[in-house]
Length: 303
Ligand code: CDT
Image (cartoon, rainbow, N blue to C red):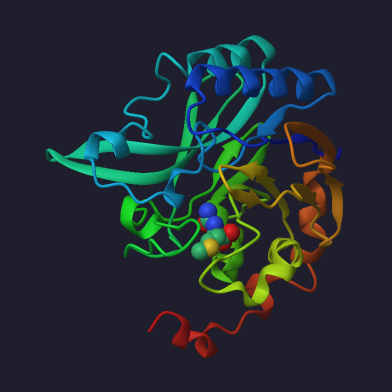
């Protein structure tokens, strides 16, 4: 018996700096309802879904910065999403900015969670690969200050039993690194879900701007094929506060083929029927890790 699961990508269009959490969450609930109406059991939202992509702005006031972070999940503003998930029996992935205190020290993470169809958080991941810079670049039209605002994730890459499959999580820049997929595949992950905010113009290094869509799909398709897994990559997209964010959200099969893709750069749900047993095809042959990997030749990766 094949193990089918209907997975939806829920791409989110631009969020203005002054848009409230309540308004964003209402958009997410609408996307979840739409995805569910089209048969989705799991819905994947983007990275830092609840606000405008704030790392583009240099800020010094701590209260101003922390206003973009969540101190509880769910909190009063995000609870309607959890309630909708429970009502519909739909699981979801959500990226958000997390503020937590460890031994009274504030920690800021770029975080994602897996929430099951009962509205319960079953997995958490904190972004490992933080792109951009920490220094002030006021001459640029916008900045990318993830290295200033976030701590490097401390949870590593994991894999969870989720809605009948094994799911792993990543966030945005992680998708460009081959190790991301491999360490989750080695833990049995069959589906890697991830959200992204990718400006189509990098002001300090524009040389690859024209290839941003190609590099997005190239990375995820290679990850899917080389690790025999589904990859679901979902954008916050569109013209957002002077920065154009890449769309192209998609679901990729273990063959490396894109099997569903958003057609717009706005709020849009799209669904694919995924046969999780397909992951075993190549894991038993071409990419049989136990049989073919030669780890003694890979030591330079970790040493
Ligand atoms: N959010 C995120 O990780 N975005 C990066 C672009 C960084 S440009 C400095 C990405 O890899 O898409």
